[in-house]
Image 1 (cartoon, helix red, strand yellow):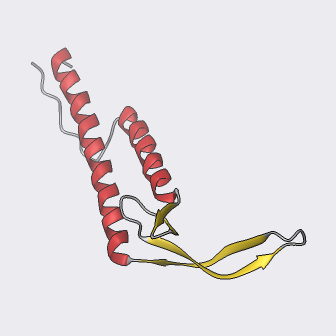
Image 2 (cartoon, rainbow, N blue to C red; image 1 turned 90 degrees about the horizontal axis):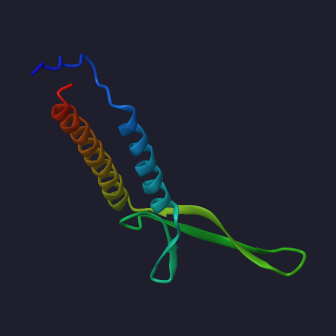
Length: 110
């Protein structure tokens, strides 16, 4: 069986990069979907780390009232947990995809 030479720099397979893009998109979607905590809007997954703060409401010419968030408050600790979990998910998906590719190459004898 031929041995595969070690790569000199960090490289990933194209299929792994595509899977990581989809997983990153899913994580972004999960973090940007509005959730409810104690009846208030909140953002973040798995922990709701960011909450909008509504400073003032305004009414348009038709009488519709709008609440527009003027700023956002966030909890640094929960934000760090969210980022850590997202990073661990991406690393796990990377390791799994590369393991599948290496296992297939070893079976084929490449």
